[in-house]
Amino acid sequence: MKARVHVMLKNGVLDPQGAAVRHALGTLGFEGVNGVRQGKVIELDLAETDKAKAEASVAQMCDKLLANAVIESYTVELI
Amino acid sequence: MRAAVVVFPGSNCDRDLAVALEKAGAEVTMVWHKDTDLPKGLDFVGVPGGFSFGDYLRCGAIAARSPICRSVVDFANAGGHVFGVCNGFQILTETGLLPGALLQNAGLKYICKNVGLKVENTDSAFTGGYKTGQEITIPIAHHEGNYTADADTLAMLQGEGRVAFTYSDNPNGAMGDIAGIFSPNRRVLGMMPHPERMAEPAHGGTDGAPMFANLINALIPA
Image 1 (cartoon, each protein chain N blue to C red):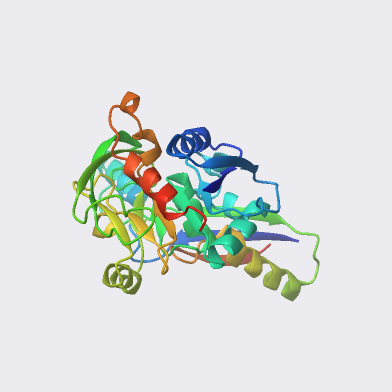
Image 2 (image 1 turned 120 degrees about the horizontal axis):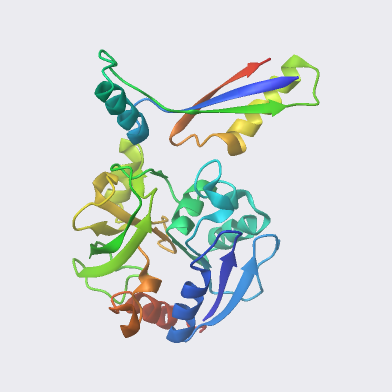
């Protein structure tokens, strides 16, 4: 089973990279982009076959390493 | 004073920190990140600057989960003095020993230059050699030095005298101009600027030297 973890900066946390991307889109003529937030995607290839167990295990991985709860939030998608 | 400096793959200020401590009179042991235990009888642990583990995932995130860091956290929780510089500060926030996080600089650029710092609190072994409000010049060299914390944490740090240094002219967007913070007992200090790079005349200045001199005086075994 594979899991895809999306890690994003929390709302309200400054994202200078996102702001720079938004600015660059504007200079390319793409108008109406009100905001850009940049995050990361982490794909995990898991030996676990039980969906509930995999979800619980990936949540622990996120809490302990993959995301920093001070500044980031995450969502997990099993695929 | 018996000191240890932790070395991670990608640390690049470990020897600078060791030299500054030795010049001030400390006996320094280097400790590898895979070691599980710190040497016995330590007074001080330094977590140096650099790019531990290539800054993969988040700056300091992987180093903070290394075997030695469990011992560093235990050492701090037992009342030991721990000093994190630059990447070391990032590592200490990732371990949870210090609150908040270091984000990318607001201007997106890596900045390497001397900056003015204001000494905010002198009630610690680290800062006792300075005067409150004293302006000192110390170099910074970082891409992720933008200190961030939620409003409650920020108010707590400021209200409890846990801000050690602030920038005179904020280079990176850090909240409250914060350059360095203490743990509640002020025995753990994390700061982005590098006092070990301003510790002898050949460095172009000695404003970092009082920190190391005062640590030696404060941590002499009774």
